[in-house]
Image (spheres, helix red, strand yellow):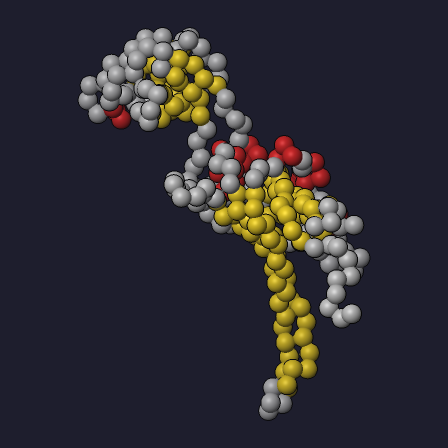
Length: 264
């Protein structure tokens, strides 16, 4: 009967989105996943140059002169890697800090403006603490937290760029943390992405995107009525001969594919 389904291949479910360097496209795996992602969609929008004739401007010919491809999704895991991608930088370079120590002595409030008065933080262990990295110093178990940049490290004494307006007790937690540069004018790198998901009949579908930039900007909201998410958008670009994997995306007629979809 007309209108009845011919197959069980319906779209329903979630997708795993993996991002990395262009040259790593074929090596992307779950280690490069953004984690929980909802409502992933990819749209192709072809454009045509059209030719008309006569008083009525009847269309007599057209030629496709572009085919824009965009991907949209909602990312829910607020990790340093994901947020770095969200500000259009290369999150694959972000390594989880995962280093924590404690102070070995109390630090008294700094006299004068803390911003211009460096301070020395004595710690139990300075492993992973080097000049240029960032620390988060917890004055208590609540939100009395201070972010500082490491100026230098001498044995177990860590000099930071600013003092503290309150007493930091002995035994206070000191953590090496990642810093995400929001609003940076650093040149956005080209990246690659792989998307894997399942159809409603449990068969797998895969998408390869060899050259993308993340062009959505960052969204960071603290809400009490629902979980926040960061809407992310990929703009997909044409490969040039100088790009990695160029030969893999040359079609039989010599045209260049922006993406590939694989399905059973």
